[in-house]
Length: 271
DNA sequence: TCCCAGGCTTGGT
DNA sequence: ACCAAGCATGGG
Image (tube, rainbow, N blue to C red; front, side, top):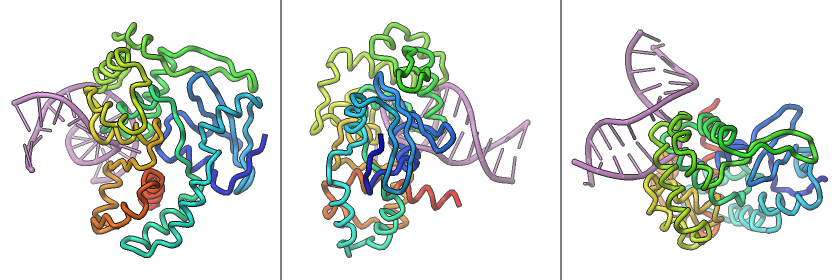
């Protein structure tokens, strides 16, 4: 079915760096996996996206893509009205990144993915996550497309296969993945609430402030979370003159703004 | 507060 | 062939 939205860009979301299993499969189609669900989708026009899935799966994906909110339009309007420090850069970044949404991703998958992301490049994060899934995940067949895919391994599966984790090329991050599994086995995933989830996650060995802020934004949907990685730090230093005026103005949209700036800045470096 | 190892891959000389 | 850097973190 076709979903109409003036703020939904498949390619930009796939390349935004918030998810690592969404990739192009040719012919304009993308595929992604979340939980036990598989989806193929493509951009039909600037404001239309075709979702190749059943009606019941669409409920899952509507939530996943954060489609039932007018937050994005409110954000865009607010950006147009902003004339404070850094407004030129922010307006350009948001215009360029229009269509990026903050996904509602699985708590466990996102935690592990961002532990793996540390001191790593996006293509290699994706390949590490795929390796993890193809090695320890469950093999499934999508009823709509007939395609085979692997789910992300759950906590127990990882705890039962520690040796495997140490031998799939995660580097020094392997022990962090194990410690996250042990921690979450104890607390349960419901322990990570939107308000305090980031701080709670930092009790896990291998989860510092940067990973926890990504976790809060991309899994717990804490839109006020503003992850600062090397790219965002460069933006703050070189584009925004370390003036944090925008942070107060965009308070409840900071996570979305971070994604726009991150995506825009990386595009500038690729030219 | 500052500094560096740890593991592994890619991209640039 | 060599080496730096990559959506950081923990420990000294």
